Image 1: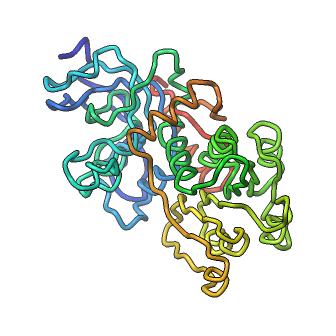
Image 2: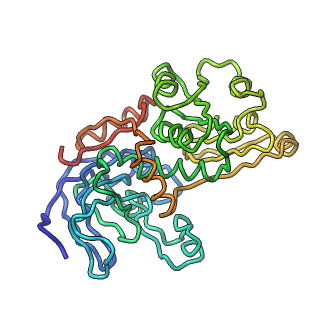
Length: 353
C-alpha cells in the first residue's frame, strides 16, 4: 500500500570506505511485506556515521552505503503484513533497523544483541536519504505533536544515553559524572539525568561547553579536562562528600577518559561505557577496583521499550536537544567539524536541501 512515491530521490552515498560522501540521485526502494517506507524529513548526524564513513570499526559496512540512523519523517508506503502502522503516521528510523524477533535476546527485549540485527546506515541503507526502508516492528512511533527536526537526535543519542543511565543503577538524588558532556550524546545525557532526579557533574573541554552545561543542560558542576591538573581529584571534589560520583557515564570519543573513570567513581559506584573510540582498550587498577567494589559495565543502544520511554521524556518537554539544522548536501562540513572536535550539541540534516 502506498501513496504517491517518486521513483528517484537525493541521498548522501559512500562508494568506498574513507569516502568521499557524495550527494547524488538514487532509486527509491519499495518496502517488503513487514517493512515501511518513511519519507525522511530530518536526520541527526552521529559520531557512528563518521565511523561508518571511515570503516574503522571491526564490523564491515555495506558498500555503497547511505549512512544515518536518526531519521524522522512520515510513513508513505507499507508492506501487506504491516497492520499497526498507517500511511501518514510519523515514524523514526533508528540504529536498529530490524531484528529476528525470535532469538533468546529478542525474546528478552534485548533485540540490539540479536545476531541478525540490521543496522541503519551501516549494514543497511540509512537516513541520509529522502526515503528510507525499515522493519515496521522497529520504527519509533512518533506522536504528531512532536517536531521532526527536534526529535531526530533523540532517536539515537537520546535513547542510547537514557539506556546507559538506566543501566548505571543510579537513583534519584545521587550524582552522575558525564564524560563528553558537551557533545551530541552528552548534552542529552545531562538532561535525561536531571529529569531522572540525578545530580550531574559535566566533564568536557572549553568555555562554550561549560556555559551550555551549567546554564542550559542542568549540570551543577563542570570539570574542564583540558585545564585540570588532576581530573580525578577535581571530579571527587565536586561531590558533596568528596568520595566521587555514584556513576560515570562515558560518551567520550577518545580512549583516555575510559582509563580514568575507575579512579574517581565512588566505592560501590558504576562506570558505564557508551562511547566507542576506534581501537580503544580499557584498563582499570585491579587493587582499587576490588577494594572499592566498583562495577564496570557497558551499555549499547535501547530496546523498543527504552525508545518509547525516552521519547515520552522528550514529548513532555523535559528534554531539549541542542541542535543546528544544515542541508543534507552539506554533510561533509559536519564530518569536518567532528574531526576537529568542534561540535557542541548536534547537527540535524534537512533532507530537502
